[in-house]
Amino acid sequence: MKTNYKHILVLFITVFITALTSQCYSQTNKDKFIVVLDAGHGGKDHGNLGNGYKEKDIALKVILELGKDLEANDNFKVIYTRKTDKFIPLWKRADIANKADADLFVSIHCNSVANSQPYGTETWVLGEKNTDRNFEFAKRENEVIFLEDDYEKNYAGFDPSSPESTIAIGIEQEVYVEQSILLARKVEDAFKQKVKRKSRGLKQKSLLVIRNTYMPSVLIELGFLTNKKEGAFLNTKTGQSKMANAIKDAILDYKKELDGNVGENLISETVPNETDVTTETRNIEDVTFKVQIAASSKKLETKAYNFKGLSDISRQKEGNLYKYYFGYTGDYNKAKEFKEIAKSKGYTSCFIVAYKDGKRISVETALKSS
Image (cartoon, one colour):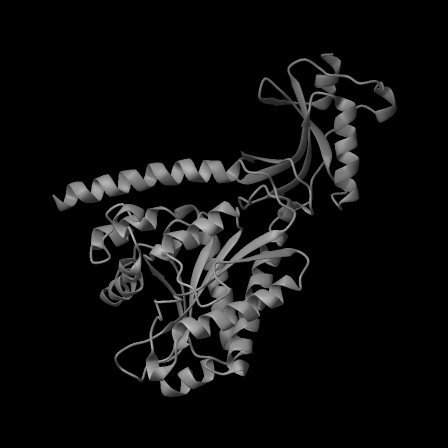
């Protein structure tokens, strides 16, 4: 019976993620990089109370400081799951991020153990690797669903005590794991290098708060409140500010690396001299013109923030490269306008390409076919 339950759960989740992910990719491109900041716990869910400190309060203060820092950058838009001491169901936190078509989801927490000795930061991404400690940790974080009304309906029979459940949810974010790991490493490096905290590293576990977020997502444990020295540091305004600033720097560095993954070393095809082409509107039957602006070995979101504000971006894989195109038209003269727009954005080596019946052809051939 357990095996059947697991197969049904995995099948349901796989179908659900496919439908939702397709919907997200089809949404309108955005000019700003949207980050959803999630302060763990809140309201009737106080989180852990190591040494008398309240996890929900520390997490909120760090989130508000982090959000203020990011909002000072015009390239970012920040959305909060909560800005006050309010109880937010786990499913609702992911729902907020998905509806915003966010580019990043960051959840902040504080750690605790029965033994007061452990200390240090940890950053978690979703995964199926459940060692005994990881499973117990995930179980504790996920059991907050029992404080929610109608939790049976909202989580479709999910049982925090079931290894089958915690393994199955790891499937959902597989497409975003690589980028989540990239950010998690940058966060831990920033804690070590800029705040001089002990890093316990990047880890994986199956957490409900990030299981349904359809974007790169991390859960950050700032440290152990059960450790007297570390708890005292995290309970101070100075400590909270330092941790928030380190996370901000990691996010900025993460976005910078994403931006840098797009190469512009393109070689233009030979096309007729522009003066040889009539300036009147020319829609050529079954031919589509686009402007190739970039190529990369990495698969990037076709969103405006990745392409210097250009929207209407399409992507196609050819060999080991992903090629990125701006615009879509049957009018060659309109394509030339797209090319000038792309050049004005800095894509100086961009060029026009042509497709007929879905196959790449030379621009010269396309124009002769008219």
